[in-house]
Image 1 (cartoon, one colour):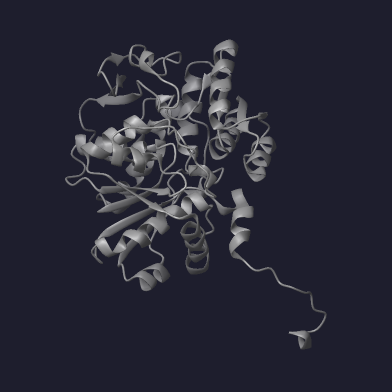
Image 2: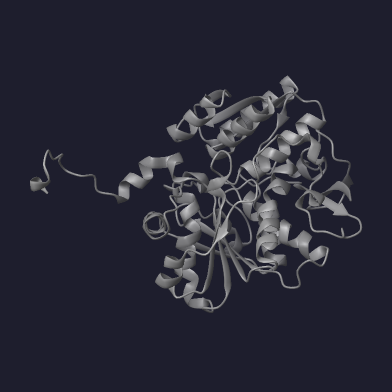
Length: 390
């Protein structure tokens, strides 16, 4: 296979290099309070391999990847969900089972491998939590130095996870946008590789592997995939994965990809309605999808329009209720952002056929944000010393 970058806006092509992140020309149009301009995507060309292998779809050779456990996460049909909803082919893609507990490990592994191949010892990232802890954990495994810029209000559990992995954590006295800008300054002055989501094209390409796995496990494309959406990089990766599969004739039909946002963080939804992005303050309990200006917004919108993607919103209360229901019906404890896919499915299900093949992405473990889960549970009021007190 041959791999290269292509600008998603102007179509110009580039060699894949560590000092190239966005299109040099299109990025000049960048304005404040809008998604990234000049997003680059990894293009692969060549003959269809005789045997399907996810590694063939990635621009870095297997020898450079950290020695991870098997990355194929479970795709399963919880019987209770089928009984509860009446849908016969309802699947959970459980990316809480990745090494650090989130789907972000897919991007981190590819970035880590690229850094190793290019002899770069340090990787820096701005994050609200999951990308940070993911890069910290993958970097620890690979023996790389990881520097993280976090908004000061990021969940403590995610900060603890990053620190436990040995990363250098730098809290920023502002939001994610400030952390993002400071991290870019840092990478330029310290010869570090940026892992910033969307800004580094490999973050999109790494996340596409979840779509490749779904195909590998089902041996076909599902009818629908529900994707929790904030920065829209996972969303873009899912589209790109299925597009690569269709390009090489592994699938005939493109699934309907449904982006699910909190109604308190709905930048993608608003842009689909209005045709443009505007300044927007996000404030949702689902911190992993709490994004005012989605960095991958333009790319995601382009994909949604090209492949008939949908976007729906759900309330924070519905997200927490879905989180609770997933726990009590399946034993899977997700963080609120991950439960948004199930909340979105519950809102959308009357428009679906009961025999449709449906995949819900579970993108992060619930232990990353226990404070949110505590809003939906009642703690025991007293302790007992004998069963007679029950």
